[in-house]
Length: 95
Image (cartoon, rainbow, N blue to C red; front, side, top):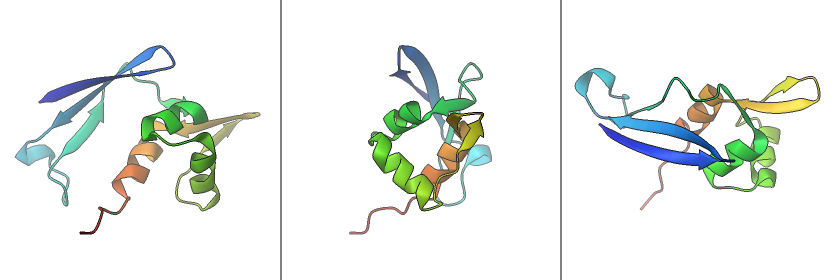
């Protein structure tokens, strides 16, 4: 198992990558998970930082219906599982 740490707005997020027969994703063979201490909801800025894109690019994907967000009053948040599903759905680069 390989563990990687990411810092988003001074909060550390532990991401572990595990490869095993029991946890293999059908098409990649890699399971990606987040520690239980990870936030369930990310701000748009945090989600954009995770993807290494601008907030505008993230909102563009939301507008196209490719990434789902939730509204809490006037706040916009991205569920961690929606962000993971979005990344899983991205096409691999063609050669």
